[in-house]
Length: 92
Ligand code: HEC
Image (cartoon, rainbow, N blue to C red; front, top):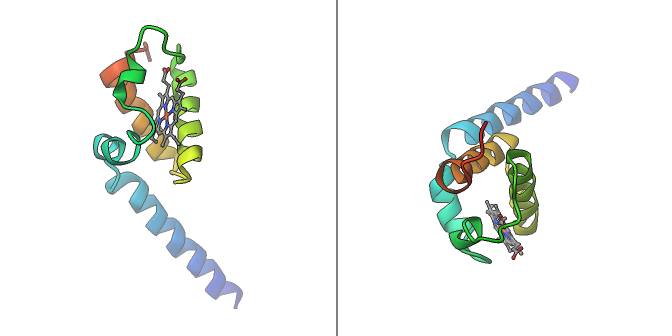
């Protein structure tokens, strides 16, 4: 029984890891999930609130929590990277 549980846990981890790295496209995800409450103008408005890369990551986490999608850490980081590359341009 213990072995069975262990094997199942491993299988779930492997499937989870594959989803996080292979199937996630930050740009597509953003287009279909992140533009419901605000569009990308909030990232470039003059009084935007995010002012650092760590701040951007925590804002992405907050919006993900609002959305209720519970993204993997890897996906949060891809989204943060995507927003930084396209809008914020903070130094890494
Ligand atoms: C449930 C509604 C909602 C959804 C869905 C949502 N956001 Fe937000 N987001 C907000 C609100 C509210 C703000 C704050 C806007 C303000 O301050 O005027 C915000 C602000 C932001 C900011 C900061 C903008 C700034 O001022 O610099 C970022 C970055 C951001 N969202 C990213 C995302 C990402 C990435 C997603 C998709 C995972 C997402 N949001 C989905 C509600 C949402």
